[in-house]
Structure formats: structure tokens, C-alpha cells
Image (tube, rainbow over all chains, first blue to last red; front, side):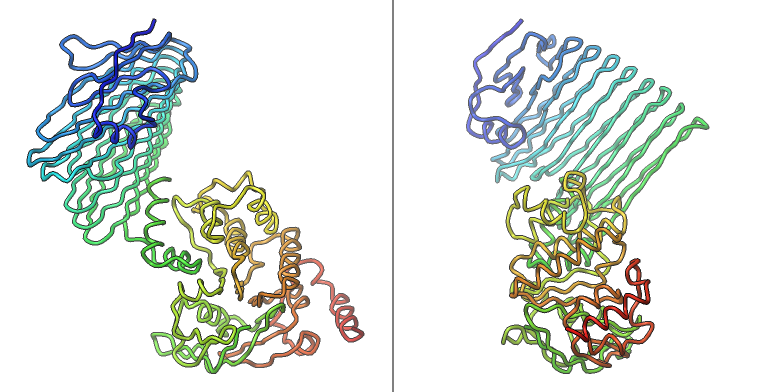
Length: 316
Length: 253
């Protein structure tokens, strides 16, 4: 089954799509896709094994991925190209048993006027037995309008027996305000890997909140958050891992401060089973002086060294 | 060529670590600095690299006074320095570090060549982060590789390169030093107590209490070394007969 609508994106949306996904300007992606621009559908394509359908009332999508679909890439980007837009969307990903796919779902917000614009994407991942998903999500803000660029994503993850989800999420700049919530529950042998990187500068604020329930025997989560807070920006980090069975949980929160940046990290572990093995690591501080010295000894200036260290830190 | 004139360095607590060091090391030669622990060898290496600034004295490289240049400026002129305690980075990979050292995106074969010299398998390490997951020996070898990648170097300073390196990799390192010597355009300075490294040196400088105790060609200095100024951490150096043979071969040369 396939469905095609003509793709309609303006120049601003096109630039945002290029920044958050591998969009080449051709009007479509190599795979199933839905482009959401200024709260409307600007293009969609389903494939034989991936169906993208509008929810009733146009408030979001149901993405149906057939069991045992292998190697497909699905793109669900959302963009706002002007001020004074408040967008709320519910996207549900139904991933069939044994499927193995990549989902790219970034968000870009551009403001050109005094009013704020906000995208609030609520993504719900339901993975059936042994399904495997790589989920990539990039957030960016652009434009020189005074209006704030706000992105408030909510990600819900429900992993069936033996299912695996790897979530790579990054905020690459320009977002004034973000409140990110991620929660999930894992059945037996399910595995969740989250790699988050956030950079804030100026007066920006970012809050990120994870709560993961390891309900099934031998379920596992690995949560790594890296953040850089520059200038007067402020970041809050909270994570809670609930070990409700024999399981392994690891969370790591590392932050680099530059200028007057502030980071408040509050990790939490709940071991509710004798065989729950939970670990948390956290480190917050400025760029280590010895790291700068090493790169300077290779010929980089202090500024170049700091930039390189931060770039690698966020990428890792 | 690198010349140090009356180099002094006083620690912030007032301790006089370097008390007037004078020497010249020449291109195409390997000079080993040795001496007891705490004698000031690592501080001297840091002063040459510009990591710490000398309190008094002058440093000249190829006829240019580099005394007042900072670490970046000295690196750009061709000073390469391998840290005694390598620095770890979250996020930067072995490939990143080698590319930064070489100032270009190195091709796979160039990376293999560098990794081979320090006894590491490229495919196992190239995309690994230079972070706490690497053992002391692994990170030390990567540190050495970042110096070997500096093809623009005129002076290469290695601080105890043998630390954490097994015998087989150590032999590879010796070969690298021999090869660099033949290139003739680099002055090699190695801080070490290791007898095998001392034996391949052209010149030996012995530092004690922040001063040069003795310096000169290897065959002259080796017999004068005191027990704690050399150590043999590889099997060949543990054989007392080997030292005799070495001295005889040097005497006959």
C-alpha cells in the first residue's frame, strides 16, 4: 500500500529539514515519511510495510510498521517557520514483532517576529516482541525574531519482550526553552539505550526528565546524557530508574559549564528487587585545563581547543 | 636543534625545581634525559613544551628564541610533546586525536602506520573514545602516536614513553625512534630510566637536583650512571652480560 501527497515546504522549512534530518530538497525522503510544517501536513508517503495515517481530528499520526519489516527508514519531522504558532501533535508508532527499522523525527522552530512559537510533540513508541528501533531526534531553533523558540517533546516508550530501542536525541542550538520528558516501561529482556546531548547558551533554559521502569526480568537501560551550559543558560536534569525485577540500569549525566552556565542534576535510583543492579554516574564542571593543554600542545589555540572538546563531548 | 640556556623554574611553593639547566640537542640525534625520581626531568619537558613557563633562562630552537612563546605558538613552530600522564577526553576518538595532531584527515593506511608503531590494532581502537575505558598502557601508546603523527615536528619530547608498554610494543617503539633519527630533521628528546633506550641514545644527559650532573655521548656516560639512574624493565636489560657486551661494542665502534 502506498499513498503520495505533493510535498509543499517553504524555504525556511526546507532549511530546518536539512538541519534535523537528511533532507536533500527533493520534496521527499528515501522511505516512508510525513512532513509537518506549521501544524499542517506538507507531504506524506507510505510504503508497502509502513503505513502513515492521520488520527481523527488531524491531531497527529498513527504509524504502523508491519511485523518483520527490516532495514526501512521512516521520517516524521515537524517544523515551524514563523512566530505565533502553538503546535501540539500526537504521533503513535506501532512497531510489529521482529521489525528492525530506523525512525528519524526531529523538530525545527523558526521565529521571525515578537511572538513565541512552540512545538509540543508527543511520541508514543509501542514495540512488540523482539522489535528493534533506532530513533533519532534532533532539535534546533533558528531566526532572529524576538519570539522564543520553544520545543517540549514527550516520548513514551513501551518495550515488549526482547524489544530494543536506541534513542539518540540532541538539541543542537537556538532553542530558548525546552521541557523534555521521556518515560518508559520494559518487559523481560527488553533493552533501552538513550543518548542525549543538549547545548544551551545565552539565556536559554532546558529541562530534561527521564523515568524508566524496568519491570521485566533481565531488562536493561543505559541512559547517557551530556550537556553543555554556556553564558547564562540553565539546565535541569532529572532521571529515575525503577528496578522492579532482576535487571541492569545505568545512567550517566555529564555536564560542562562555560561562562555563567548552571546545571542542576538530580539522578534517582530505586532498587525494588534484590537482583536489580543499578548504577549512576555524574560529573559537572568546566572544561578540564589539562585537556586544553593537550590540544594546545598539538597547535590549537585555547578557543579552538575548547570548541573541539565541547564538539566531541556532545557528539559522543 | 634545541638549546636551553640557564633554565630555572621555581614552584609556586618556592621550591627550586630547576636550578640552571644548559644543554643543546641536535637534529637527527636521540638524546635521553635520565636521573633520579624528583630530579626535575618532567618539569624540564614541560618547560620545553611551554606547559609551564621557565622562571629564568632562554630556549632557542633552530636559531629562534622561543622563550616567551606559549604552548600553542611553540607547537606551531614544531615542538611536539608526549605527556607523561596522558589526558583523557570524553567524546574525542583516537581518530580525532590523530587527525588533530597531523592537521589533516588521515587516510586509513596512515593511521594504520601510526598505530602499528605503538603496537595497537587500528580496527580495535580507531573509533574508540580516548576516555577512562582505555587502560594506562593503551592510552600511553595513543599519546605516543599523537606525537609520531606530528610530521611537522622539529623537536619531539617523550616523557617516559616506555611506561605501560609491553616488550613487543617496546621493540616497535625503538624502531620508530631509530627511523625518526634517520629522517635527520628532528631532534628527539626522551626522558627515561630504561636501559635499552639509554643504549640507543646518541647523547645522555643526567639531571640531579635540578641541574645537569653529567652529559655527553652515550658510550662515555653509560658507565658513569648510578644504579637509580637506569632500570631494566625488559628482559634484555636484566642480563648483566648484555651491559658488558654493549660497553665492549661501543668501545670497539
